[in-house]
Length: 156
Image (cartoon, rainbow, N blue to C red; front, side):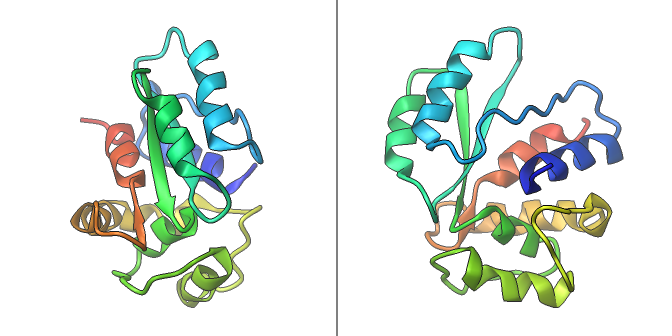
């Protein structure tokens, strides 16, 4: 299981929110294509989210594809691992890619491997990550919109 699905599946289980369903629909697919596909298969869900990174893809195309649909984008600049860092510390240092973010994350999670994420390592910091990401919302690189999705996964 990839990083994002493992994280959200773990969050769903840890916070006991059975209403959340995590589906992997396009690892390695351009976000605009993912949005279009998600629109086709998203009926029957209250909310539909696509989690995407800026370090590899054309995000403006995904934003255009999502406009006027039910699909909400959760964009991380440069990558999802920036969101994971926010569970442990605030971070304002710009980064262009995963390789620039990884050393910071590994200070908190030695040996971190994106193919073997264990949510328990991040559980205690979810609320702090939400606060930190929310404070940087719209502030440019680095930034992440994952906090909006995480907030929706947390039970009321």
